[in-house]
Image 1 (tube, rainbow, N blue to C red):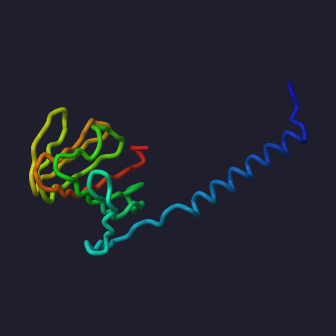
Image 2 (cartoon, rainbow, N blue to C red):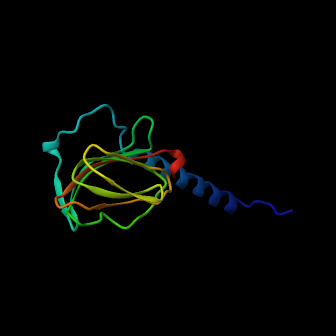
Image 3 (tube, rainbow, N blue to C red):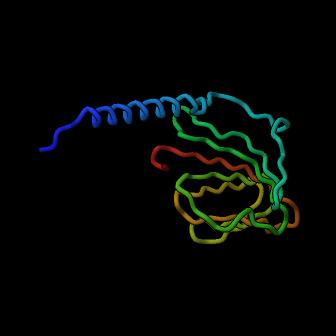
Length: 148
């Protein structure tokens, strides 16, 4: 049966120490937990994109979520935000202005202002502005331990 040498023990101790230091550093750089807050429309920066623009609102952990991400997209008439895709996190979209066609639950659906879209985890979905004016919609994404 092999014996542990002093060198083996020293290497193991260094590895354990480095792991503890890296873990502590990761915890210290984690984003703070978001508490109750409000987001003013006029304070949201409208950033142009190839398909319209986006107003990023927040991306932060909350008391019950690993991450809450919210943004508002303005999508030019006749364009698609991106190709149909899927992801582990769930997503809620609220149409504010315009007419969109969404791939949801395996079918295409045409929706207007006030409509709400729920995209379940790992289900293919997509969105196209099928109107003649810009479409504006609010997006809420959330991640939990299950969606890692």
